[in-house]
Length: 244
Image (cartoon, rainbow, N blue to C red; front, side):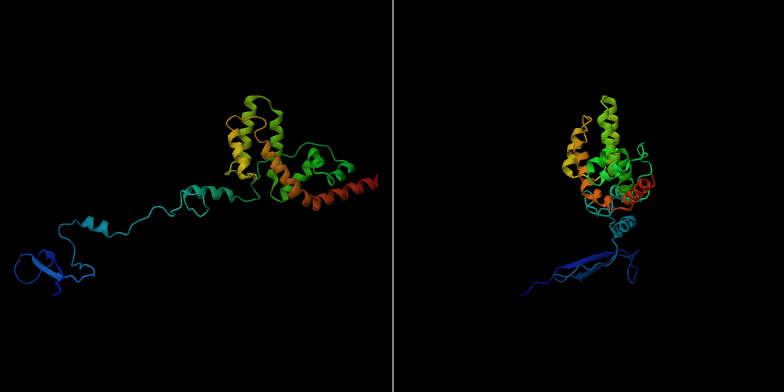
C-alpha cells in the first residue's frame, strides 16, 4: 500500500486566532502532498515583529554592476564615472591653458614652399610649427604638437631637479589617462614610460615623442597641405611677392 504523506502541524495561539471554544491554543494539521509547497498558515508567534519585517524586505544589491572590478567601459561604479566624465570634456575647452605660440619672424616665401616638400623642414621651422599647430587646433589634436615641444624642452634641461619636475608635468599633462590633453600612445610605449619614470631623464619620453611625430607626419601633415590655412598662407605670400 502507498504510505500516507506526513502531516504538517501548526499551532496558533488564542490571541492571534480567536475562535469558539476554549482559550487553549488550537492545533491545526495540514496534509502535505509530495512535491508541493509547504502550506503557510500565519506568522510564528515566537518571532519578533522586526524579524518578520526584515525577512520580508527585498534583498538590496548595493553594487549597481557586477563588473566593477574589471576595466571594461560598461561599469557604472564611481571610479569609471569620474574617469568617463573627465574624458568627455568639451573639445572646445580641453586646451584652455595651453602655452602661446612660439615667437618667430614672418616666414619667407621659400620657407613656406619648402614646408610642402618636407615635414622635417616644417617641424624645424618655428613659423612652420606655429602654422601647423594652428591647423591641428582645428582638428582638436593640438596636444600632439604641445607634447612634442615639451619633450624638446625637456632635452635642453640637464639638471636633475629640473628634469624630474618637467618629466612629472609632461606625464600628468599628456600621458595620464585622466588628462584632457592625453596623447594617443600604444601600450608598449606606455610601459616604457612607466618604467623610466622611476628615474626620469631627458630621454624618458623619446619613444613616445617619435610615435607622436610619426602620427603627425602620416596622419595630419597630408591634410595640412590641402587645408585652407596653408593655401591661404601661400596666396598671401604670392600676393606679397607680386606687389614687391
